[in-house]
Amino acid sequence: MSNGSPQRVAVLGAGAVGGMLGVLLAEAGHDVTLLGSDRTCTAINAQGLTLRSRAFGELSAAVPARPWLVGPVDVLVVAVKAPDLLSALTRAPAPLLDGAAVVPLLNGVDHVALLRAAYPQARVVPMTVGVEATRVAPGVIEHLSPFADYALSTEHDTPDGPGALLAAAGLKVDSSAPDETTLLWRKLAFLAPFALLTTSAMDAVGPAREARPGLLDALVDETGAAAVAMRAAIDPDAVRTRLETLPPTMRSSMLKDAVAGATLELDAIAGPILRSGVDAPVTREVVREIAAR
Image (cartoon, rainbow, N blue to C red; front, top):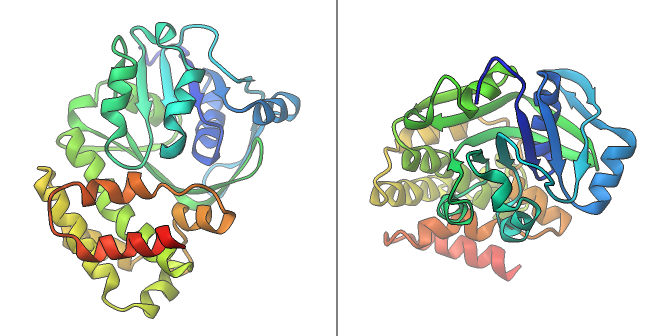
């Protein structure tokens, strides 16, 4: 890829994260195509893509949407939920991605190996994203918070790579993680306690923390232990501090999915902890509660 010229970018998944990124990359002058369901594609092709953001203002872009990829691209951003990944990959055939950068933004850690098996001739560059955004209608995204933080590992931080592409579109990109294992577990070490706490309580983080004092600390400790077992460099105290500074009204994406009756990313978020080999009785019990409900 060359940072000085427009790139051909396909975004697999036209939800909150994919839709927001599609608008910002199109605004930056790139040739963007969204890949999604027939219903979503029809809405976007008819009325365009709109982002209402506290950080970027209100933006609209005439971004084409298709049910599947029909030509080669330079970058494929994978922005679907983890339970939808396998079925979504049929929208982006592997022969069209030879030599491309495949950039997954999924929660969890297991998707990277799957994508490398599915796209052996592509370069898979794992990234993470922290953003509070909601798709309020097909093609309409509300960015509810002032932050939209992306991260990738130092080993994948190149002047002409996906990180530079996103940074040039005005997004904050952190490349301090020394390796991709640490990158993915840094996100999971924060997300798993936050998502499990709020979803088990079916409430925002402030009331959920008050209802079950000590639960968040226990979840942080168990996730941190799992991260260490997987050879990731995680600071549980830093995670705890970050969680304590969250606005009390903030809700996790898993809680939003639970309220909406959608399939939860329970295995993607809690599965790596339970499969790590460490003792995680609190995490296991919270997962049982959520799964039973």
